[in-house]
Image (cartoon, rainbow, N blue to C red; front, top):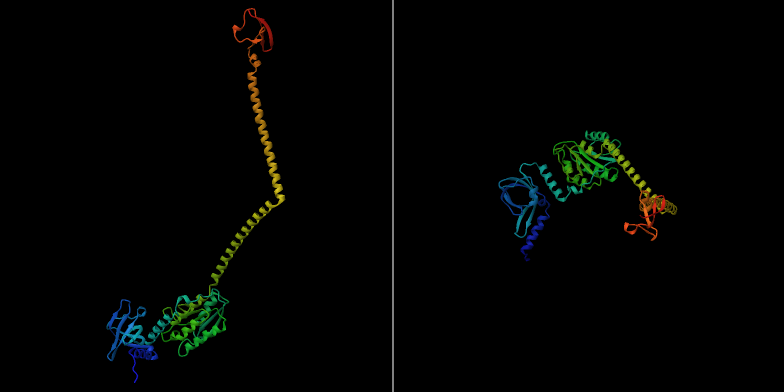
Length: 395
């Protein structure tokens, strides 16, 4: 007889539950009771009906994504997996999605797949690729029977004539449609002949649009090496394909609008770019001319002939400046001499005599008589006037 530990039995039970596929993807309908919310935001409750009850846990992140408001007595449909919580030895239903009771099965499947793919990162905006600005070839995945293809071709030809449209036909409704859509996307990718793909169909009920909610279609869009635009249904219709596509358009015609540019806008852009190019060319040419003039000036300054000519010019200028300086100095000296002459003329005794004065010389002493006391009666004197001297005797 072999004896097992409690932990071994708990581990075995957990492993047995995890390998049961039916218990790992389970929808359960029941009434909420014993609801408690932890400080971390996790919800613990019990789902019950007349036949039994099941302990459940809804972690905070999944609770925020759920549409149903949990409350005691609420009738809900929950999706999740059955697991065994070893520390307490209890079987639990790990809930990842809660919807109010009465929601259709397709809606439940849609919400479950949406939540799973969102967790997986298929809807992450960071992974979505930008559309080519000027596609040369446009791939279209749609039915050949409806008006959708005609609308897309009309819009594309109106906005950007000349774009080649490559159609990969596929059923967009009913059994086998999802496989045909996946095959069409793969064919366009394998051919490597298009720059962008439009996945489109007209409006319809949830059942009609269901192929675009299939997981394999979503993964085919995700795996596409070419950007995919989803134009499925009307503006109010949202499918998994819309969420995983690189860009969602509200209608097929709107998908064609965003897939190609408007040729009028292109003409305006070309005109604006041409003007910018001309302005840039003129600016660059002016800058090069200025640079060339600067280089020519530098080259002239570095040339011996230019230096000699420059020195000659400077010598000429210095010569002219010296001549002007000498002439100025000469005029200045002439004025000074003229001033001295005037002063000398003023001090010349003869100039005094011209004004009627005279000089008296004592003949015996030979001295100029300055005072009356220097002569006596009978002394001989010489009197000098302006036109000459004459003799006289003092009385």
